[in-house]
Length: 101
Image (cartoon, rainbow, N blue to C red; front, side, top):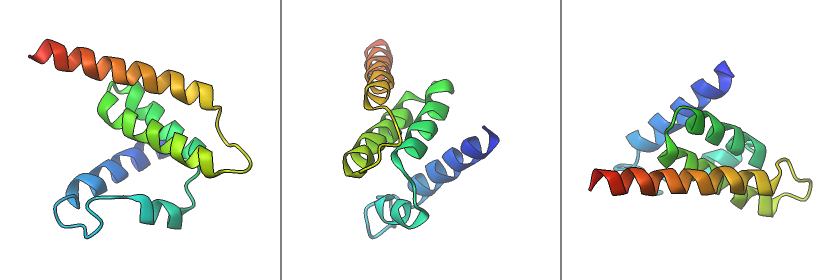
């Protein structure tokens, strides 16, 4: 779990640091492909964010897991489980946003 936690924060930092200057507009798609990241990797990173109650980033990782899942011929994650985590994360972001306003 320590590796995933570190990887999650490294990617979070990278995407936040390069959003302003990255010619790809902060997109991590190009280097996720180079790293060989699969849908389950994104799902596990989403779970790290989810468990830390960082639902905003969890949504991004779960969405990426679903996108990669569509491209995989041998599925690395259960789509219904990813959708379950994603739906609750979206709910929590909405609840938090509603309470803030």
